[in-house]
Length: 277
Image (cartoon, rainbow, N blue to C red; front, side, top):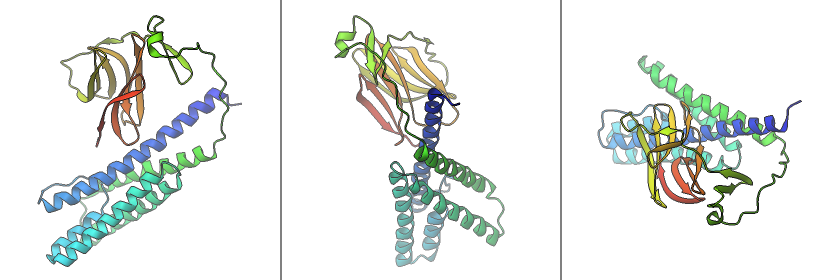
C-alpha cells in the first residue's frame, strides 16, 4: 500500500516533469524567433533547439526576393509561433494544450526529415536529435499532465506550529513560519569558492546581506555573504527553490516556470531576471 508521503513525493515528481516540459517548450519558441531575426541580420549561424517549419517558411520567402512573399512568410511564421505560445501559456491550466504543442512539433519534425530527404542532405543529424529531444520532453509533459489531472487530491494532515505573527518576533527564537512549517536558523554548508568557474544567475543586497544565486557545473547554490547555505545538483534545471533562514529571515532563490531567476526575502520578491538557458 502506498503511503501518503509516497503519494506526495510522486505528485511532486510529476509536477516537476510537467514544468520542465513547459520550460523546454518556451525555450524552443524563443530560439525559433531568434533564428528568424538572425535571417534578417544575415547571421551565418542558427540555434538548433528550434522549430523548422516557421524558420524554413521565412527562408523560402526571402529567397523569392519579393516583398509580398517575404511578408506572407513572416506572417505565417509568426502565426505558428503564436499558436505555440498559446499552447505554452494555456498549458499552465490544462495539459490538453501540451498535447496540441506535441502534435504541432511532431508535424514539424516529420516535415524537417522529409525536407532533408528531398534535398538528399544527411548532415542534419544533430538537428533531428535535438527535435527528438524536444519531442521526448513534450511526451513526458503530456503523460505527467494527465497523471496530475487524474491523481486524487490528498488530504494533508495539519501541522502544529507556534503562533508566530511577524518575522521580527521570530528573531530571538531564530525561527520562521512558512507554509505551516517552522524552520529554524540554517547553518552554512561551506565557504563559497570564488576561484571556481561559475555563472551568477542573480544577485541582490537586502537587510545587510549580499545574496548570490549561482551555478557551478551541475550545482545551483544559494550564497549569503560568501557562505553557501543551500545547494542542489541537477543536469537539467526544472523549476526549483533553494531556501535558508538567517537571523530569523527566510531567504529564497531559484527558477520559476516562466522561466526566470528570482530572489525573495521574507516572501517578498527583491530581484528577478528572465532566463533563456
